[in-house]
Image 1: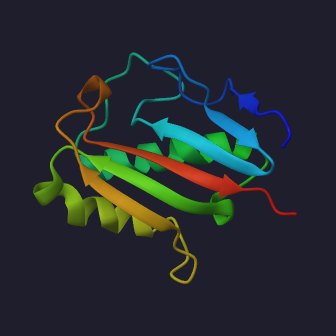
Image 2: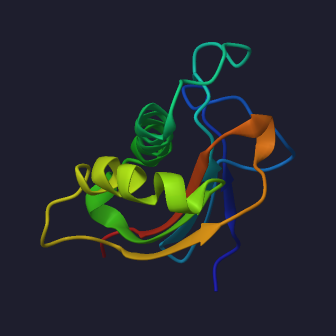
Image 3: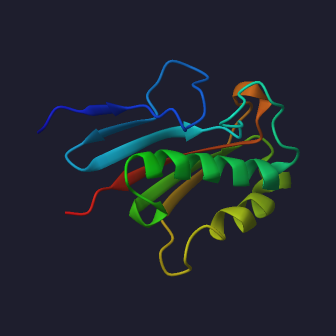
Length: 132
């Protein structure tokens, strides 16, 4: 096994805790969960509502993937964390699924949680794989 590579990207959102944006080993890449923060202004208020926050989270994940030279087509699985599961699940799903072709949806887990950093409504992390 090759040693892991720890990736951080200036174009991606600022860290809200001690982590790398992504860690890669043998072509497998774990993307740290992204928050709905503005990548250009970490102090900006979070977008209002789960739809806008989900869009911002997905766009932030795309920034990290692009920094790796990858895109959503390389994503194999995702984990979604939402604070208001019953209220926001359907709305989050509507935004999330619009980012993927219907025949290329990653495996996914979605979990209701009691809280997220910065009082966000949604956070998503992903696992991707480099093509051979």
